[in-house]
Length: 146
Image (cartoon, helix red, strand yellow):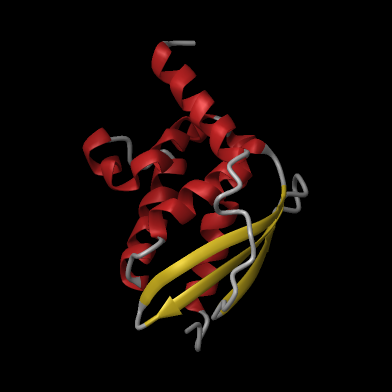
């Protein structure tokens, strides 16, 4: 494993245990459950959307390090963003995980979540990395989300 891969692996391990985003919100405007039937990972994503902006976000649930790290990294990225910006980040992340976007410059927008790019080479783990992002997409598509 090269040095960069080790840093990414460490980031995923660290973020999967980070308690900062693993909590319940006091006043969520939207809750969405996500489940990966192929491995049993599950999350509940809570959002507080105000005036078209994600004021706060959190998650609870159980799963592998990749699914939990992905959820936490996603929340770090979307907090404070407009719903539209969150939508474009979802699309970019999904394209990265599917191996469609590999340009480092393009992926800078994903900040630390770009560390999950190597998952695109592990087909069995792609659904783990996408769970929280797909759950967010469903939540943002709901009418009256906040």
